Image: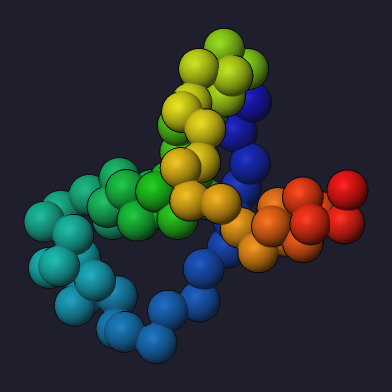
Length: 66
């Protein structure tokens, strides 16, 4: 499913065309996808992440209160 986004650029259309190298839509999509997290991760990726190595201050406070 695709969503339509309207962009109102401050740069003239001809200059955008020149920057994009001919295909404005592909160029703009290339800018948008990384900004909104183009790659969707799965739960397996989430659970396989390494745990933090630096203990936070809250961990120290919690441990001291026990």
